[in-house]
Image (cartoon, rainbow, N blue to C red):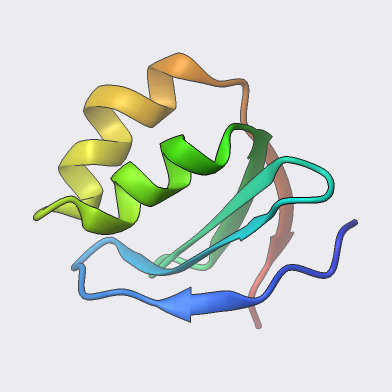
Amino acid sequence: MADIQMQSVISSNISSAGFDAVTGTMRIAFTSGGVYEAKAAQSDFDTFMASKSKGIHFNKVLKRAFTWSKIEKKG
């Protein structure tokens, strides 16, 4: 598992997100406790971070575009 620097986001469903440029890995942590990651491009992460609604962007774009793997559960 890559050591990815996570950034807090303002969202009712997503607590933080991060991207590792070396491995091309995007990681999303949900407020429910699940943490998922997928291979993605830096531009995909940047677009997600710039989106007005992180939850909607994840569900309508990222969820369908990439294969996500659950990596851990908080607490």
